[in-house]
Length: 204
Ligand code: HEM
Image (cartoon, rainbow, N blue to C red; front, top):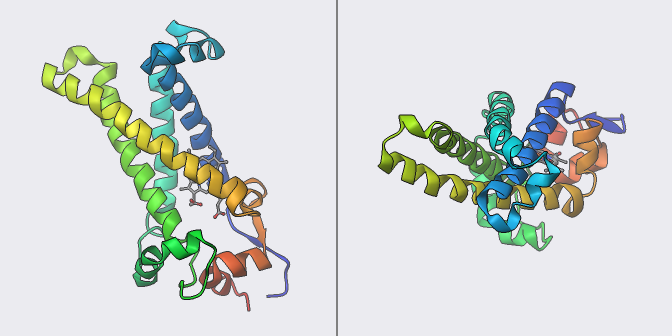
């Protein structure tokens, strides 16, 4: 391949990603405000307690829908193959920047795939439990109690995952932000981080 940059994400992919990221951040911060009195001050940033109580569920619902668009587009590409199993078994080497013996990645590496499934599963359970908490009058007491327990646990898992995702995409792997902002990466970036995908795209 002679061109210096390669399209990594289409406009539609970037739009659904950033919509879901914005909704996630809104739902996460308003959720934290509702969760603990110590964090209730956060509600002031988002229009006050009543506004936050009314809009947090909608933020969560829009997050779920935007993630659903990403899910439809990427679920097939996020299936783990045999190389991904090896990648996961050697992920401790990846974390130490030791690349020897780690299989080349396709469009997404196994860590990104695992993150995708973790976020999809936690979003699903956040929605289920969130709907129960949103309309408690329609749920029996044990279901309400289960939802009140499950919702913050899934939120914590999801937020922890996004912190890792944020770190990886802004600091650990320079060049990633360009992929999600401009939609393109350099040929060198593609070759070094996603070698199999680079060749599928015609790179040599
Ligand atoms: C909070 C701020 C966020 C930032 C700065 C961010 C940044 C990025 C970047 C730079 C990429 C491209 C990585 C690459 O080219 O390999 C990416 C990909 C992706 N993002 Fe985000 N993201 C954020 C939030 C989210 C949220 C909330 C979700 C969904 C729960 C999400 C899901 C994904 C997925 C599934 C991908 C493709 C696979 C991957 O790279 O992990 N992101 N993100």
